[in-house]
Length: 167
Image: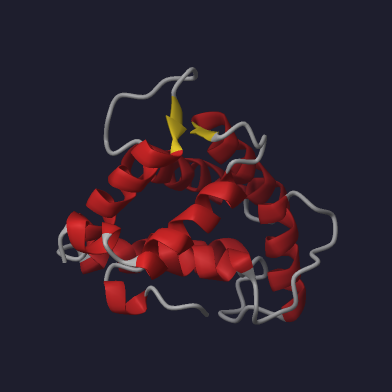
């Protein structure tokens, strides 16, 4: 699908609007690298394995650089408004269709972030911790199975539009 196909989908645009609002942690109407770094640091604090710290940071920098900023040069002052974000996200998702392996690897990395005991399964407690970290709350308020965070992961990391369904 082309970026225009994504932008003409009311469902996809609504999901991206939700993603934008959730990731705009300071609610100033812009996304910044510091907001993505803040979420990465929350995930790092939840990890038992310190060897993953830089990988977590790299994934969130990559999400901001490639998905939010469209591969453009970014610095600490870069702020991306909703319209620019929407155009960049459509281009990024469109190009990810041809790169299933990249999307698969990012999904595996996120699974590993959440699976803090490395059991190969995500327990309710691990999932609750993940939701709390993502939202900045101590205790998540979203019921398991209906989480905005899991929907956002699917929207951002799924390489094919058919996978962009509410989880």
